[in-house]
Image (cartoon, rainbow over all chains, first blue to last red):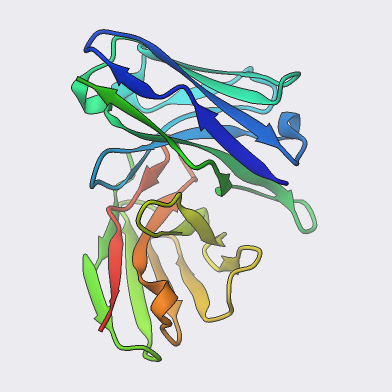
Length: 124
Length: 107
């Protein structure tokens, strides 16, 4: 089955750290750009970070730069998000998401076509 | 940062009627625009990518149009299961940005 399963969320004090994991199955994980998206309680979706298929390129929203680090282990089909210096405003459900990648006759899209169920991070 | 503005905030539509959702980008995103549906307690689901291509398994009553800065998601004949929040997202430039969402209610 094609799926993403997040884990590692929980309750942490301000200034603390947490590492999220996203286990991928049912597709060739190493071929795809991967993302983290978060959603604060009752709020909308916010993109957090992206990592290239090989892991060599990473991108972050300004509010987490210098505090969060995205990484991947393609041998384990797993995506990670290391979150340090956590703040109350980081409280959210964190989703991992896969991009479409190449489709049709060579067209490429980075829309998010597969999402995990989310893991809740509470900073309090 | 590209701002994505969705309207209206809430849309109340009778079953079988048409629902039209708008998304405006603060600068051109070409056709790098996706629409997602999110129901309570669930992860988002991709509906439309490339501004107008339906994702796998998405019913034909969902359609997308537009390019540049103005985009539309149309639900041609609203079903009860379409009650959800709908988000647009640009993936043309960094940072990726989402609209604030449109809540579709069944009248």
